[in-house]
Image (cartoon, rainbow, N blue to C red; front, side):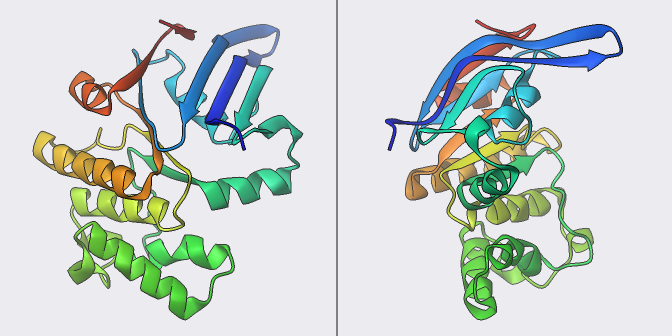
Length: 224
């Protein structure tokens, strides 16, 4: 096992549009330890979300390497990459992406069922995680019946219920008012501490970044 949960070496990413090449990230070096908290900050278009996708194996770099717990993402087959994502990463986005036809409990249960867990055990674990984010009384409600903050807490519960090594969050409070955002962020920090889950957060909010302690500032794809 590596000392680092995630390590990037000379990581680069470019996109191609016909004959044009659009560089997004340039020779980035980054390391994240188990249980560490990191904020990724920078203006729009600086490469923050692209970096998050590369860290989670949702996209492939055009240069350099990403290592997860000592394993090279690039060496994995697509099936192995999907397995690692499902088992070891949780994702939280600005918009919750909950399945509207399912209840909060069913949404949180889904990752465990996809991992092959027993239905009864999966529901029990999902309900326990909903309880940890303060939503036990809302377990049978569908997303449309929940407030924005409640929906985001369900999304956090869904990301954390498999007990991942790392949660990657892209502007997780960006669609919430200041008070609700603060409450949701406090829940994420509490679960980070109690579960030793690394937390990597893309945010425009400098105050939230300061709370995380460690930050990476991106500007035009370069680390500053």
